[in-house]
Image 1 (cartoon, each protein chain N blue to C red):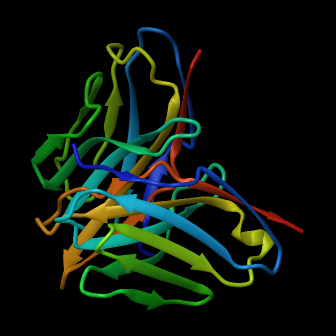
Image 2: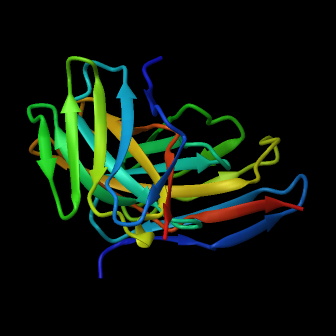
Length: 114
Length: 113
């Protein structure tokens, strides 16, 4: 089955640690995105990549980094510079054509700082 | 900057009644809109979409209405069921290629049995 997979589902980070969240898709989508969701809030864009080896900052990129070495993979690293990393992180991928965009989301990773 | 917002953060509906969830958008250049449903602890799931050249689109038990004059989008759910309880987000997209979807804050729908 085609889809988008995030791992792990739950992640705990100690103060000062970097952690990497995985996102893999087998939908052959060109574009991939990372969003952050806080309780009672909507989705805020962290980074996105429209094509392999290229990515752009979103609205809240500070303290995060990404890479896009393969079409299927778009890992997100939460660095120690991110002062409030506890949140629900969602990865998405899209394909656009004929004026329509299909956007599929992973099931999310809940990151908690301990 | 341009943003997508929702009129009501929470909505409680009796089982069997119809639900209406509203969304206001401010980017007049947006030409494509999507409604998502998000259950607790899960990723958003696609419900229905609409292009700006349409006023209405129907799916199974759901209807999306688009009023470009007042930049308003609504999601109507017929015969609301307990399984419809979730947070609903609208998202908008501008015509430029793979530009990201912009999401509103969401409305929590609670169905009372």
